[in-house]
Image 1 (cartoon, rainbow, N blue to C red):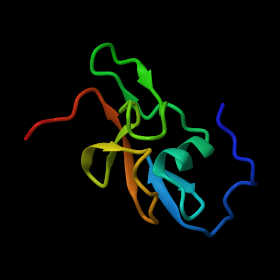
Image 2: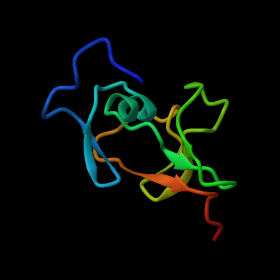
Image 3: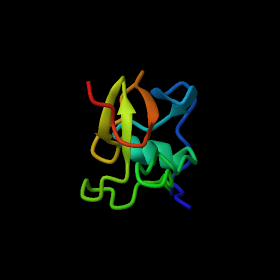
Image 4: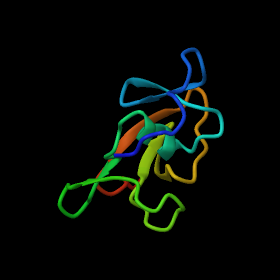
Length: 98
């Protein structure tokens, strides 16, 4: 399991919301790193068999970390800087087309 070398992010620091849960993170964290540090592994479900998928490469190559950020689907959590006030949800299956 992913574990930080330094202690947990301090209370009162920047925070985002993931599936209704508040996640405090260090400034400069990617969204994927912030979620992994909070103990959240599965960020999406495969559109093929609904299996849980988690960040793998952490550099934008594998697309296993796709999430919905502030209502926008198909966002790569590993390439997105975490920002105070973000609202993040798991992506279930393939993105919805308009």
